[in-house]
Image (cartoon, rainbow, N blue to C red):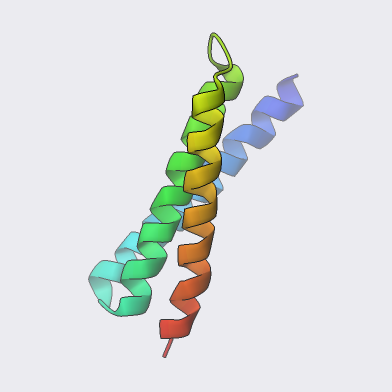
Length: 87
């Protein structure tokens, strides 16, 4: 179980780093690409937090699973759509 915990910490660290880079890019050089990418990255982070709470929380809830997947797919779509605005 300990190796999974270590990989989980690295994974969350990578997602937080993704968000830091996305938000700093948005503030450093504002553009449609930066705004859409930052929004997608943020939704992706929130989806992972909901996934962790639902998986390792006291009980698994279907509503949290729906929330997790909704945020995940919307975030991924925004990240992909941001490429249309890349200059």
